[in-house]
Amino acid sequence: MIRLFHNSGCGRCVVRATVAWMLWTFAGCHAVDLYTPVMQEKLATETGMPKELSKVSLPVYRVEPPDVLYVEMLKLVPYPPYRVDLYDVLQIQVLNSLPDQPINGYFLVEGEGIVSLGPPYGAVRVAGMTIAEATAEVSRKLQTVLQHPEVSIVLARSAGVQQLTGSYLVQPDGKLNLRGYGMVYVAGKTTDEVRCAIERQLSLYFDSPKVGVEVAGYNSKTYYVICAQYGLGDRFVRFPITGNETVLDALGSLHQMSSMASKTMWIARPHPNQNCDDILPIDWVAISRGGRAETNYQILPGDRLYVVDDKLMATDKYLAHFTNPIERMLQLGQLGGTTINSAQVLGRGYNRERRY
View 1: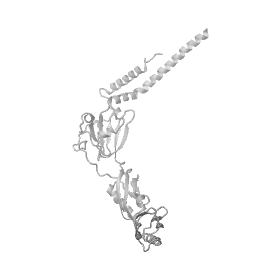
View 2 (view 1 turned 60 degrees about the vertical axis):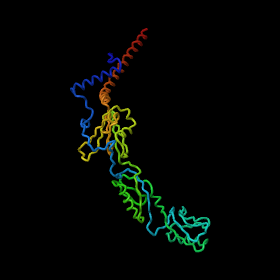
View 3 (view 1 turned 135 degrees about the vertical axis):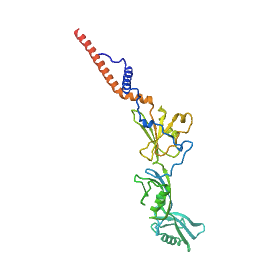
């Protein structure tokens, strides 16, 4: 059997050279273009484009799913007649109390529905009562110890405040679930608009509620870094935006950026006109080696930072895409020929031994 190549390494080189020559012959004198020509065009840089040394503040943040909001209940006073509930806080003030044991402070309605007034006075059950009924009940209890006690009780904090204060996830339908007090639509609203919407909803259950709203998790506004890897697909990474990122910050967030040799990159920015491409070319050498900020653009929500694969590496992978199947076929043929030759040699030796 004729051996096609002395070794597989030389065979691989010959096959790739042959395929490259065939591509060159059929394509004429034109190089193989692995990327869309439109994306390589250099567009004019806008003078007002925010950059490293001339950043701008992002527009007013509008809440979208899946942002996380922290809602603090500043004032929640239920409509009268209010009935005392477990874990409410009552402000109790008593005149004519014992000199060494005054009653003037805040008292928690404990889990059993009672208020503990101290060792000399004992505990009083007030859960389920109105404020007036609780005042009368505490007065009757103190009359067993004091003469002519004057009792004043005010609701200092409802248990609903503690239950409602916390973090809320904006659901896929754009609503907040207020834990038993209904749903509020907040998608597309600013934090002030969200605060007003929550207060309107809570006003169905409380008298003139006041709340504070802030964004605890900025999850809906992002930017993307896409690294082209021919033959392996594009590597896609999504990052939340804080409003201060530049191209250098975005590339620094990629842990595998050091393994990429390409210096060709650009920002694809969403344009209001969907039929128009807004491409911002990036001079990586000027940013990294020269410290120049002309193309170190500020990253805005929705930006796509695209990093092209290195041309030589891409060409090698492009040729390997065609040559690898041929190499495998040649290796299989070589392996089959070697196996047949080995079997023939073994057969001649076996026959020679039988002859003797």
